[in-house]
Image (cartoon, rainbow, N blue to C red; front, side, top):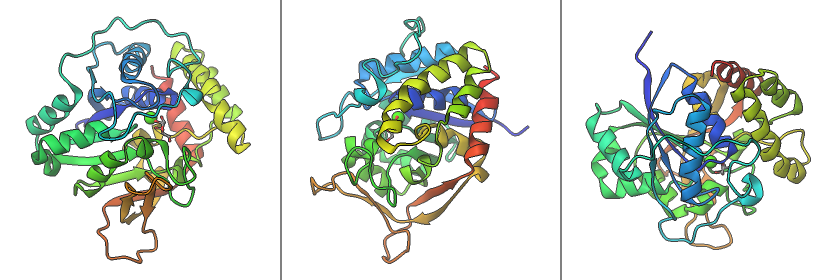
Length: 313
Ligand code: RIB
Ligand code: CA
C-alpha cells in the first residue's frame, strides 16, 4: 500500500464538518497531521471544542487540534446557529472533550508543517471560512509552492448562494481570505454548492448510518437529523446537502466527482454580491484557470463510501 496522504483539515464544526472529520479519521489512505479550527458556523471557542468532541467520538483522542482565527480578516464574524444549533453540533449529546487543545496557534501549525515536510507532501482541506489559510499564506508566502493541493468546500455558481442570493457561507464569511487563497497560485480543487447540493441526506441514507448501530453511526444520524431540517424546509427536498464530506471523499475516490478547470474570482467590493464566486465555466475570459471546479457527483457512491468508512469506527 502506498504511503498515506498527509492532510490538514481546517474546519468550523458544524455537523457536516464533523462527518468529514469522521470520514478522514476512518480512512487509512489519509494521515491527519492536524485539525485547525476557525470561527464560522459558530464562534471559535465552540468550533475548536467540537473538533475535539468529534475526534473523541472517532476514538482518536491523540489527534492534534489547534485553534486559529476567531474572526474574518476584515469583516465581522457571521455565524449559522440557525442551521447548526447553539453548540454548532446539536443533535447527539456528546461529552465534554478530555483531550487537550494544542498550545500552538493553528496558523503557526499550518506554516511549520508545510515548511517541515517535502514540497507537495501536504494537502490542505478547508471546510469553513478560509481565514486560517489566508493568514498562513500572508504570514509566510514561502509555503505556497510547498502546498500539495488545497481541496476546499466553498463557493457556488450555477446554484447561486446559500447565505445570500449570490454567496455561499464559507466564502461570504471571509471573502478577503478567499481572495488571497484563490489568487495564491496554489493548486485548488473546489467543492461548491453546485456539487454538494446533489449529495442529499435522504431518509434512507440517514437510516443506513443509524442502522450501523455503532456509537459513531447513531451520532452521525443524530447530527444529520438536526442539521438537515433547515435545508429540507428551505429547499423542499428529502434531506439536506452534505457539503464538507465531499472534500474528503474526493481525496479517497476522485472518480466520484466531475468538474472543469476554470478561473474562479471572488467579489470583495459590492455588498450586493459580496463573497460571490464568479466561475468562468465557459472560459470567456483569459483569467488564469486557478481551480478545478466540481459540478457532478456519484451521490450513491458517495454515501456508500461514507457509510462503509464510518462503520469502521
Ligand atoms: O455553505 C456550506 C458550508 O458552510 C459548510 O462548510 C458548512 O459547514 C458551513 O461551514
Ligand atoms: Ca464547514
